[in-house]
Length: 406
Image (cartoon, rainbow, N blue to C red; front, side, top):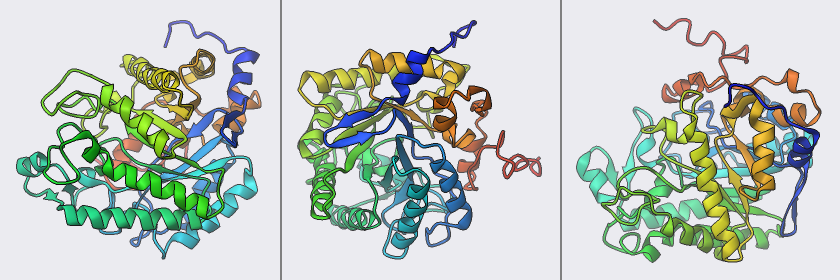
């Protein structure tokens, strides 16, 4: 970030190692493994032995919160051919994986992200939308009817129930990065019917899911349950989340601030802040070393949401994103943001692939042993190609993955 890297102090490490109280929940430290799709499931969306190995390796990092990758709630709609599916057929595999991970890191909170891809599905997979204008611009993208959305809602609820039955510590309802969940929230969602137009209609889908998830968790005796959503609070598209109307370009966070307040009222106790749509604006979502302003943009957006929630008396855990590219500066800057009240938890994405044991090494004072993400972009390239995603810089299984390509 700077020409001269400033060294983190013991105070900075202590901040990152400190627990966070969220109601009755204690999160053991401030480092969060973000959900990273690995595109390596079976045809039916089940875990493979390789994925089990990768996730047990990730558990060795002793993260405060560890998200399993985004799982689709219905096999018909996958983002990649190898995307995982949460279903009656895969629930026991997820439960077994959680058991193995807890045996390694019992203090970590394990969260599953649930989703439907929508328009971001890869080549050869069905794409759907709830926004008429998207379908009109590309008729190959199917426009879902209200009845089909109702059915999808029920699929989501069944997936929530099965995820809780599998023994998770939390659920993230995905509303970011161009996936279907975020389409409902956009001011450009002017569809007729109960899922579009007014703000109440555009938030109806998420309200149903969050209320159901909180009730289902309580019915299962899980009072200490993390529930929330990862949200692209500024999509940087006309009429996207973070604008004031269907034809607006200028950022206006008024609606998204109202939405995160409502999430808390419905039962959420965390919000995970991100931005943009990586398929079309990768630098907004995944800042690079060449474009460092992207990191500061994430800081700004996260603080804006956290300040708003504090002002209206809500205290969910606020997870920030885009810290990976800070490199050696990460501990100092992340600790400062926590101390300044700009964020509660530090989310890492690409760094999870580069070094799954990042927190364990960092908090044990073994910084010289950390494999830091270089920002090469190869993991994103693998995802676009619907291949098994991993770090081509440090993971021996992936180092030669592109050698055969011209």
